[in-house]
Length: 414
Image (cartoon, rainbow, N blue to C red; front, side, top):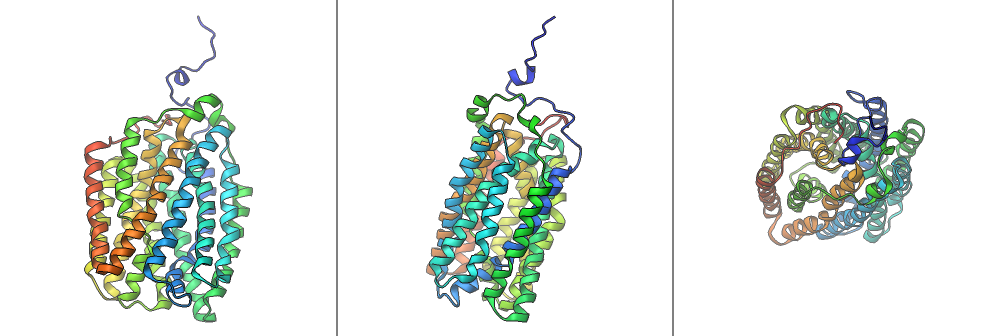
């Protein structure tokens, strides 16, 4: 009988079954990360829904520059996302990069209150997104590592639900402060408070299990090959993202349709209430019905919503469309991340999530520029219908070229 301690799963390139580390349901690490996401998004969404009006009003920027701000910020962050995931694999640690990313964003985000020109807003947004890039891939890899495979959709859905709950509270708080003070800059400055609380909750509440990398060689973690199925999935995501420009355009469209400026944060909050209420359900749906069918359903909702934004008018129509758009997010965000974990092996999981975030982030610049230029040249209808068409093509590509990716063994993490 051989006494060789080498784990056979490791020899096959699979993740060992660490039963003691994996819990069924949403475990404490995921819950703590959810609280951090909630507080961070309270801070972020106190600013974001007011930013288009701030840029195009007091700072006198046009719609095209709005696309540059959001697109360039996400593109710069995309390269950080790519490296942060790879680095977390090599370091065999996730938490240090997560802490660094949340800290940077929380520090620089309120500085938009001091902006005297559109360029200042651009700088702040880029640095904010760099922080997001540092934390995104390591955080998602950590969620995958502490969750059983058949519960991943639910875990990612819960994390996104908490994120959206914060995104719902933030605009409500911003709207109340704006009605009381009448000063956009005061609202922006006060966003520092929930940001600081998020970093405190992260440092004190999130624990990393060192056994996640116990049987994975460093060299393998640094350079494990990506599966062809995962590469095809990235290509389809890239096509979808090309039509998924910044949500700032939808807020601008709502303002054009008659939503008062002071009520824009409340509309944005309602949108996030839908996402917060349905995201855990949407992620769990992908555990039961499959990743691909759930994503296809969500992308179809996206195409219909964008087509509606292109042709509808009036406050009530905008409210209904933002609700439908929220359901798109709820049914796809958890499922998309769970499919990344399903298709990527443990040794390259950080890199896989880095690529996922990098591709979807980098293409926001051409997507936002395309939307901004079409908006200025041909109107909002043409710009938004183009996004709907690209989503339809991406859904077809997902159906034809990407495997379902569902896990079948709750003890497995691959």
